[in-house]
Image (cartoon, rainbow, N blue to C red; front, side, top):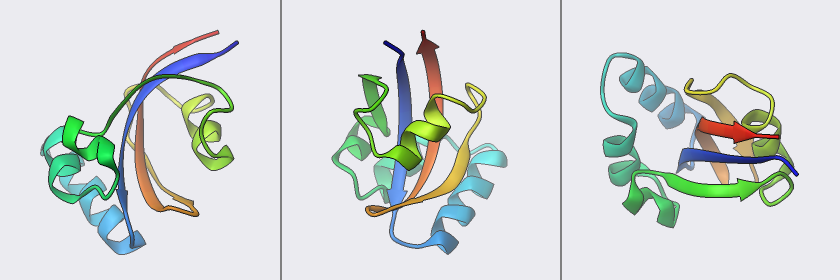
Length: 93
């Protein structure tokens, strides 16, 4: 079963999500922005979701985590929870 480690940042608007992605691209730390802006409890850990298996997260989330490049910030990814920035930090088959 596939597993991954990832971190994410969850906000309620696409505009804010895009702004934060741009700030990360300009050198701000993902963890710092997650602590300040993320509405998910994982924000307190810099967005760290730890290790999880394929199928444990919502489909939109899984699609990015298990298919897109590692150590790249992806998003905005829209789910029922809001808009995410996602970064997969490792993946195992």
